[in-house]
Amino acid sequence: MSEVPVDNQKWLGCEFMAKPDATFLLDDIEVPHTNIDVPFTVSKVEGNRLWVGEAWINKVEVVPVADAATFYTEYVRKHPDHAWGYMNRGLAWCCLDNKDNAITDFTQAIRLDSKYAIAYYNRGNSWADNGEFDKAIRDFNEAIRLDPEYVRAWYNRGVTLYEMDDVDQALKNFTEVIRLDPKNAAAFNDRGVIWNFKGEVDKAIQDFSKALWLKPDYDYALYNRGDVRNRTGAYSLAINDYSEAIRLDPKDEATCNSLAWLLATCPDAEFRDGTQAYILAEQLCESVAWEDAYYLDTLAAACAEAGDFQQAVKYQELSIKFLDKTEDRNIFMNRLALYREGQPYHTQPVGTESK
Image (cartoon, rainbow, N blue to C red; front, side):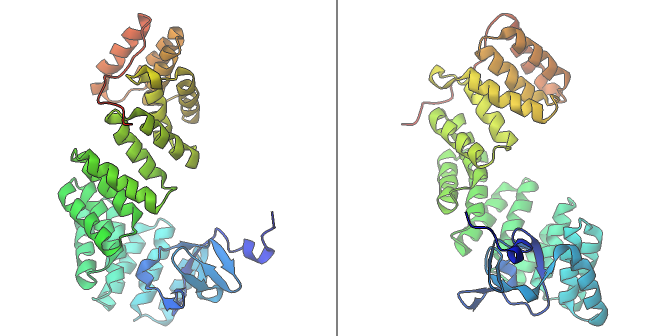
């Protein structure tokens, strides 16, 4: 394996922001700044060019994230009437998790340029991060009014609407994202989540599969598709999806727990594997210092499936100790009673196995 040149090491994997008048290029065509995530991470270096996910930018046109707030403060001192400087300093504050300063700077950028769509978009993101969803929606609305093809604004408005439990409007936003950007894997995944919520499982699986066709290493889409397949009785397909998601991200706790639970409690004996479920669940419990009620519940089910009811009782009692949701207490107690009687817990059949 060839070594990475020393000069490239200070660029690869590092986060930067753009300097004034920076240009993003793809095949010698300028890419709008609204298409670039900020801060951007360098994944490839060719001479003086840096690849930042969507386009190339010259090395001399970037500033490291750690220095960005200082850089833009000096810029706005020299150019107090330039909205661009305040907007970028706002992004620098976001990188430093200083949301109040970020909102102040985005607001100043908007005062200086009331048609600055990206400033509304970024302030909307800050409002959403603060849980002030109504304000976020107003800013996303204005960004979209100013730029009707602003894909990221449509997408983040959809995410915010979903957080506000307005799933129908969120669905419309993700559909519009897909119309504007048919290769947007995240929009297909998130629309799939809504179809699943609405009980449209075939449409959900179709969207998750499309997301994976666009982005084969999309572990969230694998988890989501596996979850739908699990709940509809397609157990072997669910196991395949969960397993591939874990291969991509071995530390994904939700997927590890879902696979362990399926292997321990599947209503179809063909797919149960108490030993493998125990390995996964034990690793999960170790990662959270044995203090998560639901991971311990899974570990207890795995022990029971493997025939070790003494350990199953031990871990189920421990899970009840850490249980916060009182509405789950009776469920956990019922499983404990099964283990004390030397019986494993298996979920009820929910469908037939897909071929």
